[in-house]
Image 1 (cartoon, rainbow, N blue to C red):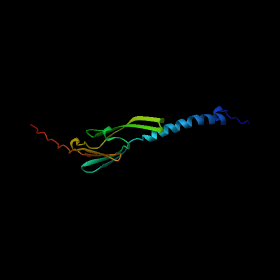
Image 2 (image 1 turned 45 degrees about the horizontal axis):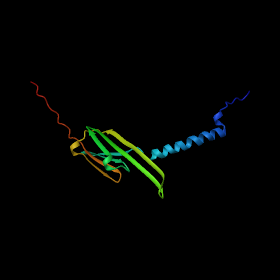
Image 3 (image 1 turned 180 degrees about the vertical axis):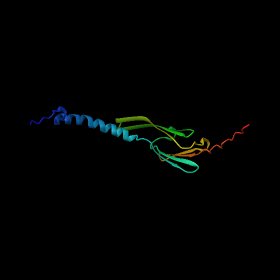
Image 4 (image 1 turned 120 degrees about the vertical axis):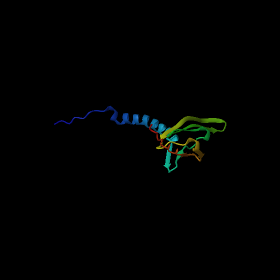
Length: 144
């Protein structure tokens, strides 16, 4: 019996090394860029009267955070701008700019009392206190 093997031109060492040399640096650059802005991490806890939300937003200015409440849906949006400049004496060696946004929208089991809701931002953590709306009393209709 004869042994057949398929020839793969990209499996040859020099060609394989060439593609690895091209792809890996690009992949590592994308990973480094994405690691600067990881998705917003949230912790949501519930008590009898309210929800407490903690969102990690490191490096975001307070004025660039927007929180919206619509019934039981909460939306958190944050705008991030980073400018980095590396100088050697009077000469600029490298200048990097980044601008982007974070956004998370989630729904809770109960409607939120928007008038009683509060937010604090300290040390890169946004803390929301979202009181639950009192359940509406059922209205009994009189039958005539």
